[in-house]
Length: 427
Image (tube, rainbow, N blue to C red; front, side, top):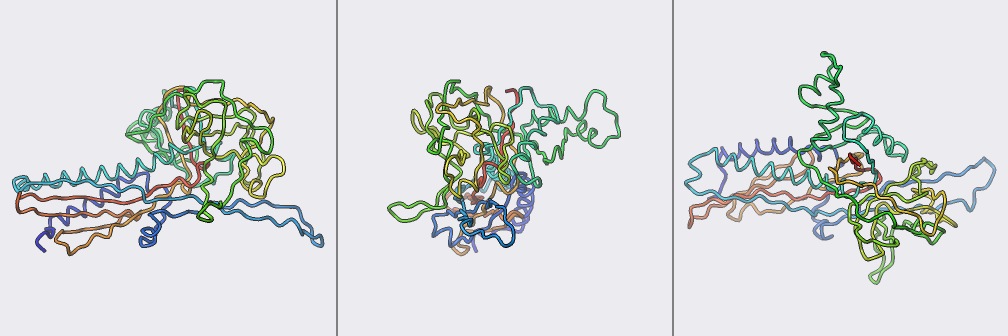
């Protein structure tokens, strides 16, 4: 083949793939779901992924009939899309190719950018939709800060294994500074690593990672007078989960991660804002007992002067609750009110530190069907997570240039925002 890769280029690609895997820090700590690519093409690159069932129990003794107690189980699902198609293209002239190091550096740069794209997509999924919000008044630097993230997960029944946290550099180093301490003694492996490498590792059940980039959340500007109706079975605090709904085209799946609510005003409210509602408390998702802590929510979008989309939905199971409401109840409305006050938690602009349970975030590797006999050299390889890299090379005789491109196709989904969250300092 006229555009075939040289032996040196193939070796360079193998080295590039190895480095690419090393750079995928966040993708190693989320679930991976491999899809059938033919099916994905026919389904517009979207597949509905199931959420966990939550069952209800009743008291029963042998000999007593439980007729009439059988419940309809509602299977919830969320759409996952191969929505990221990332490419790094570059070209080199026949003069550039005299320096083989140039080619290697460009490949290294391409690898770093694509790995960064995947990590950022995962971070955005957690930072944008994670509904467990832990605001800290002071700067980072204490074990208790991370322990609060552990507490909010435990209280709401999030599995206590495979938990991860990614912190901005300043916040991570602040936590490392706490490990070093002013009265430290050499010989302690934990504090030695913190002192020598600013390394934290496992803290309060979370495997921690340092990010050299982090999202930033602006201070909420919605004011202190916004209210929402939480009173009664028809209030905004009584969302009903449903697996499907009926439209003109028949039954369609429903994404139950979100709810459109009506509030007194959305003036200056912005996507990403975090808030609590007066007297609306989080419950343990399995036992349904109140935690005594206000449930935290995130604004996903502002839709009108009085409506906004939030996550998670407010499932209070008030009044004559349906089976689905009882199964997926996530709040206890202690005192119902026609105008319950909303309190925003992101009172100051802050770096967004994210934490999650592995099953809440999922990456979907995609695949390009690139022909290998169309005059263009093609190499492909797959990482341990199933993410595929495709490298192509084409020589243009007219300009004496070689064109390269490095491609990857993938999707990221936050399947359950109530199993991921954000940690905000200086609030």
